[in-house]
Length: 206
Ligand SMILES: Nc1ncnc2c1ncn2[C@@H]1O[C@H](COP(=O)(O)OP(=O)(O)O)[C@@H](O)[C@H]1O
Ligand SMILES: Nc1ccn([C@@H]2O[C@H](COP(=O)(O)O)[C@@H](O)[C@H]2O)c(=O)n1
Image 1: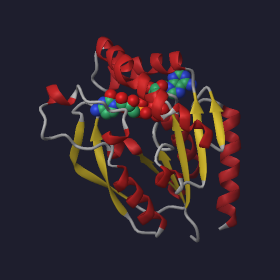
Image 2: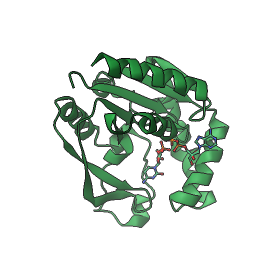
Image 3: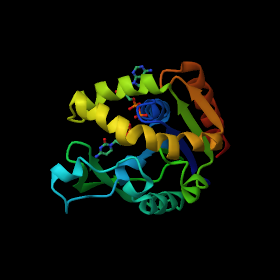
Image 4: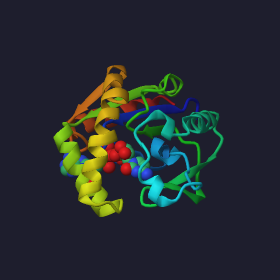
């Protein structure tokens, strides 16, 4: 393995970033490792859960982005890392970590990953998954109620108070840095096929 390729996948909440990243991973299996910015949410064990639910999770200060940058640099130097594990139901980090081995392709996924210049500059290919806000809100309601322990009312209140305004400040303006914009999200087969072919060419060069 000569050079590690870092692919950034950004896009609004519930746009289909994880779906795109997983489809690439399925194709290349052990040649690809996934890192989510969300793994690096700051822990808030000092606060009771009744306070943790009220925090703004859509602002750059909610993340330990420095640790993510450091972990990517380690993987690029072919060193394994221990990544954090985050719980959306507990609103904090869990005690365990997960070992990530270096791989030829590292996919970094997160709604705010193009906002940080140092993080952005580590990426060789930048992808923005572009899905309409109403579609994203519908997907988020279903996902957060079914998988993240939320009520319908809490999803809608959080969306109006923080998710939407922060998206307009920290996500949408950074779309201009993307090399590729994938409309509609994770089931856009033509866009995903093109990406998979590009990655195949990169892997063949090594
Ligand atoms: N094309 C699609 N049509 C319908 N639902 C989708 C589609 N793509 C993703 N989803 C669903 O929407 C939710 C968010 O998708 P996900 O890939 O996790 O987005 P993100 O990582 O951007 O938050 C998930 O529950 C997923 O199953
Ligand atoms: N405790 C938390 C932490 C994060 N969120 C929300 O997750 C969204 C990011 O995840 P996506 O898979 O949708 O990109 C983000 O918009 C946060 O609001 C949360 O609700 N609770």
